[in-house]
View 1 (cartoon, rainbow, N blue to C red):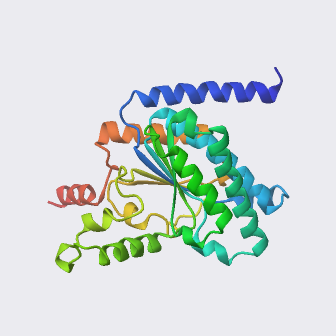
View 2 (cartoon, rainbow, N blue to C red; view 1 turned 90 degrees about the horizontal axis):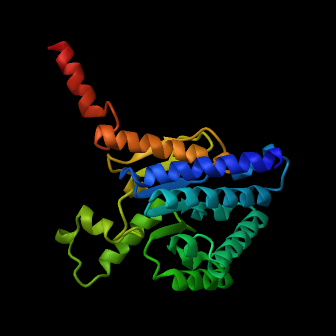
Length: 276
């Protein structure tokens, strides 16, 4: 066994150990959001074409999702393509669309993730902006995985959090039971793209950037959501780093009832005790 194969075998063993441990802990986040940032910088760093950086990002996504589903995560929501990304060069946009088409086709034809883990695939966002060929692949994949009940994969493309909130309000306004008195946080939530799914527990963003970039804005506002900003590029973010984040989350949930230590109210109480 050469060095690379030996490392891959060891990494697989460690990943399997982590996932089995987490799956029986009952402290696994049920819904994780991923801002997969850094593909273009990864390509530049390694003197690749931009599309090669995006391909490396898709490979990383598959490995991360495998670990998540093995550990017992119910829903993963990945930010694949922002509506704002249409402003990039035609070459890059076309490359991303072709890559998305290929990956979605592989999910339906070869059973990657969907068959192995019983994953229902959903593409959410303003899909009317996509070309007909890609839309056909999306509809086909969503149709053949719609009865999978073990887990859900939301692929956000093209998507922004503001458009999702606008979509929710627009859907409410045209509904038969619309009345301003009936609009509550719960009714808005029930018309989001993520309606009827577990609430967001954990949000992860790579590349060292500390902003949400218009992703899951409504869902992330809940005080119990844990946000992890990771200082590495997405293609460099492997299963072992993901396992460590899941372990931290489990520890936090188990010993702090799912709350971050020293939240605002706790900090204020500790200050008041010291000053009184």
